[in-house]
Amino acid sequence: MDPRLKTELWVLATVRRCSVENVPCTVARRGDRDAGAVLLKINRFAEGCSVLAQSRTLDGELVWSRGTGPEPVGETEADAYIARQIKRDPDLWVVEIEDRQGRKPFDGRIV
Image 1 (cartoon, rainbow, N blue to C red):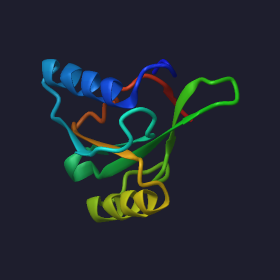
Image 2: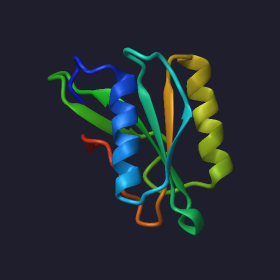
Image 3: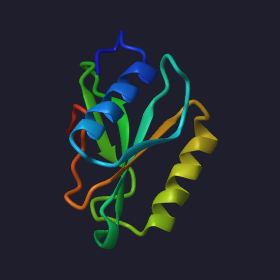
């Protein structure tokens, strides 16, 4: 994401791209329209869920960290993690993707 691009526009464009690619994707929670960070919940159904948290490196590169750890977790655990993060940062956006392959439609590498 270009740091000058508003979060709302970036998220909605990605949701639209998922729709075109036939990947179910919804905005589960809207945060700050201009500069809210994003949590990405990827539901792989029987394989479990992963929650990725958006951040930036010291060089400004967009990256994602595995908020729920390296292995998928149950949906209840993923939702509990998201709830804790929202308590810390009420400006967060939450985007949920249902994809058995676990694809991440947002740019940026996972660290």
